Image 1: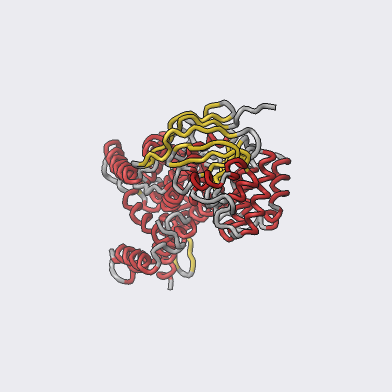
Image 2: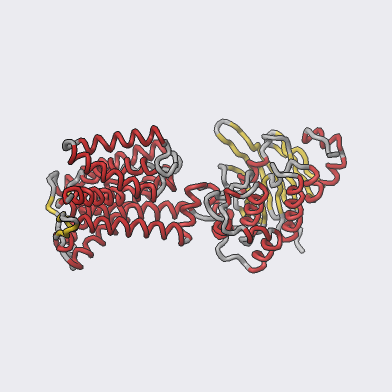
Length: 236
Length: 295
């Protein structure tokens, strides 16, 4: 069994307009489980994920299982096996649930299709419903299913519990726990109980730079350090 | 009564012609946000290519029967090739730079007219009129030229074909998703750029078909033909709702009928004015057009 990181970022910079958003980010993502990317609002977490999939212009090295992907365009990067679930889901509102999924993967492997069905049985019932008419939680299921169906080597998931009711947060966290058994995940998440439940490793960003890496349980057990890095306590 | 029937048929035929030009514009704007002022050049290129083919330039092509079908197909292929070429060479390098794209397409439209003028002269050239379009059919006492029916059949076929493409094919699924959120389509691993080229090719092909049938309707082909039709096609696209095919189809019928009826029942030229007033009215009452879509 290999322990080499599935994703390595080395000195990644992103400039958007006049802003130097990422200022030399270097991090690794473990080949199994969930690595959480944490930090206060506006420190570059979403930009880091968008840089990996090429949705923002970036410099530096980004390697997926040792292969350089940092100079590729978004569709190519995704086809190398990087699934992306954006913040705010971005489902195609005018397409049905089935069309959203078919767009992502017209012919999924049976195991992948079975996993999606196991995790989100509700989607089968709503397959003919327009995605724009779904609740926030159901849209999150579509977004996750869309990333799960193609054969991915890594999933980038951006704030999947944002704006969801507590019951749905628990459901989504349970789904992510199951997903991470199949595919490693780089997770941006503000909800620390969810991070505590899911994440093995954490990377903390501040002002576009990595300021902490380590085990999630160790960081969250240190309330002072958590407050210092994230601006919130870890007792919640 | 017979006059009214004739006016209706002529208005519908004109609307069909506007739709053939507008449908490509609508698709291109809907997916790519490009206001393609070179669309008239696609139309003219297709019309001149068909004229050239039917005039003996292409073996087997001619001014009637299957020869005319072949000439039309040649014009459509040339329109598609011009559309794809423009997207690849001029639009793609200006991806996300909308003002520059508009300037390039405006320039290309002017260059296209000048080029055709330079090669074939400024005067209209007589366009072949196949037997199918030459006769008349009497309905309600009105002798309606068959070319109106040819235009109507072509427009309905194009509308149904495009709707089927959008509804039942993967390309159509990508186009519909791309209209909504282009970046997210790419984030699913799909090359939207290829779809852009295809959409330009489809737009060019349909515009060329409009150019050929419009030339049959007018009896001639001229360098500025595309430009004058383009103005009304833009009006149709805006009234229908930018990016909406069915909206464009409805708007094309309304514009064609208003233009014809106003020209006949008031004075020649009032039809054009009425169409512009209709555009202003729709924009005031329903800024997103009939389909409710806004730019």
